[in-house]
Image (cartoon, rainbow, N blue to C red; front, side):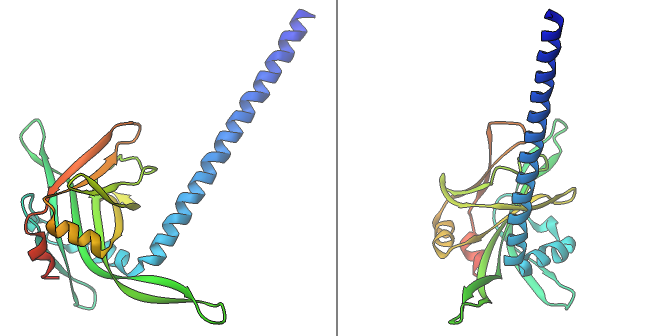
Length: 219
């Protein structure tokens, strides 16, 4: 009888463990669906910009980008049209004193899709000018935590991850408002706040805003 009770107890424990596993798997799948849905919406909204960065900047002269001041950086697309951004990067030294790029950020003028309803209730999509902020962040960042853009220590914008690869790291983007741009022109320092996967501590990546205003006028 005692053994029978143990077997029944173990059986219930097994059922409970299976239930937990199934529940955890279900929650993980739902989370992936949400991430995929958000990224799909983002790709639709910023389709022009994403095509630009996936294709054009693969041939960009990144050697011109430095750590002290913003610089204009231009590439030509498949139609020989010149597309320009301004950029700056953050570097660190490894144990052999070799400089490694931690993050590179870009600001460029582009377009975004805007959806609205006409008088008949039909959805219409139009394009409007937009200023995009792009951050190439290190691999192994926590993709469930939105990177945050700060100017002089104050939050300006939440960024959204689009993809990760070996060449660029993890790319995050956001659309800058006129107010945010003015803060960048007048500010002293820009920071991108992110987090390593599996860590509860934030990582702060700093960039100077020197020459941002003058370089922004060039694009």
